[in-house]
Length: 157
Image (cartoon, one colour):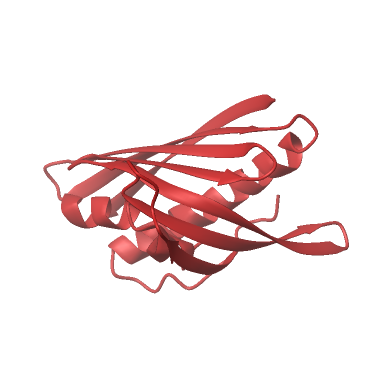
């Protein structure tokens, strides 16, 4: 297995509770995810708050294919959201989001991603995760600030 991580920050003029609610709403996030084409609710396992199956459309050279992974919301507090996404074979993405609001009405969102997958899949999967989260960051800001989150694709990985 190979491991990697990255993080990004989002600043949005909105309420803290609104930002936490969005970051914990995986189907809503899937609607602005640059690779996702479908999201459907699943029955959560014990100890899981919410589960969603997300289908994404990917490309590798001329090959186009779809993958489906399971995203589980593990924990939600007034200033933190923890999720984990799993896809076979043995690929796991952990998302730890911390939020706080400053005195000017701006919510600061820090997203930390930990990614692991089999060695041969890692370079492709890690690039796709970074690409998707760059697009998500723009979409999250737009949604929280009441703008049109129309899918504007970030630069391809």
